[in-house]
Image 1 (tube, rainbow, N blue to C red):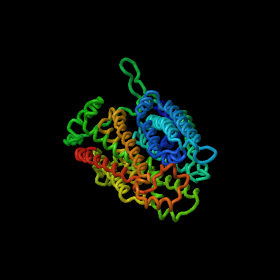
Image 2 (image 1 turned 45 degrees about the horizontal axis):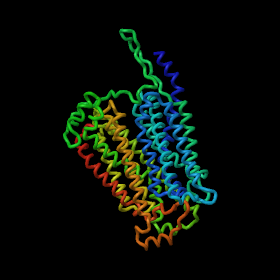
Image 3 (image 1 turned 30 degrees about the vertical axis):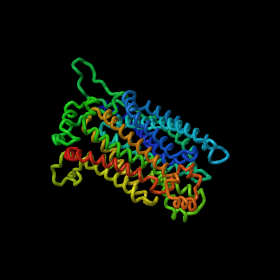
Image 4 (image 1 turned 180 degrees about the vertical axis):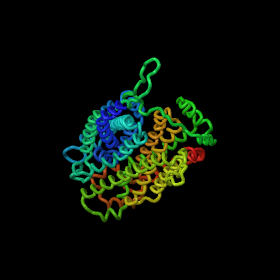
Length: 549
């Protein structure tokens, strides 16, 4: 026992340093979700269409999701420190190259360089920026997996849930933290009052490179505490885990007797889902893909994450469209270009922050409720037990609630959203629904297929990536089509031209759609249709699993 106590005392400083490093990495890793802040500056300075701008965002999505399995494997094999160093290089390279590209597009004679009017040059810049943002997206995956790897090693023994949920919660707060920094005068353009994109990208590149490089010294994955286990008959000692140990230890939990209820037969949840996973704990990729429920969960991620990240990447464009669409309010505002630019930046930042807060609250609620109120949790025998311990809420019930929240927010945007003042409804619903879905789907996968959780959920995240790319590109295409004056009545266009002054911070070769809800109505209707399909496959899962998940 004395040896164990001495070992614990020796680990205390390293745990403190690791904790600080985990917080630093997690709180800055989500920088890509600040894209609504600096995306408009890319549109402006390079003369891009919104479709071209959102294709740059697609690079980050691709890099983040499709490198996740590789980063997880590297963390399992080599520990968190190499991941932090990789993230440092990727963040620094990606963001600094993006800043250089935008700086090159802004010459000393004015806001727009002659290159901005050259569509061929703009197309080349888009390809380069997309490739650079792929590096940044991969850096996100490396930084997050490094933090998770270290957290589960230091704190996962006694608090496995918190070891995962705390870094992920801080990650969801990244955009809130970073967007508050973007409002500083250091990053404000003196002429327009809007965000100075090159300065901001340079700050992200240098800052995140230093944060992750320094965190590499603090992140570690120590071996577990020594236990007084008897020696083996052959005298060999038990092997101990090192930094090459898996990110998550083999799941020791299993479904209780109530899991028999999962045999409830539906088109998507059949009797062969649980017996295979509960008995052997392993399924080949082929067998996993043959389970109908897997495809139902993939559709849920495609629709919910895809639609939510469409809003998260394009909320800045929605703000600008609503400002110009709400003609009377903007005409009365008056003021100079700098005032209007600052106002628009503040509105974009407030929506990014609201989504981040709602996302964080939903993740914390879903994580706590899925453990405390799970139907598989034994009911208290004492009559005076706290009321919360007697409440039972299925993961599938909460998942249905998250999908309904998203659907309600998207329908509101498609039919009722007509001013920036009402955009909070959409942002709040998006943040809550996104957080619930992104917490409950992996939790469900962990219960059903615990032994290969990383691989199985990693495969499902490809559906989320596909949805995000699909709906973000759809939003941009609809917005670009609506921005053409020929798509609308001459009277409306004349009113817009005469009543509203296009500031340099908000106009770039017709890339900004100024017609309010018409700029995004079709996109939200398409996302709503996908959510209806997701709800259609979720209801059978809820009927089958509501008493056991």
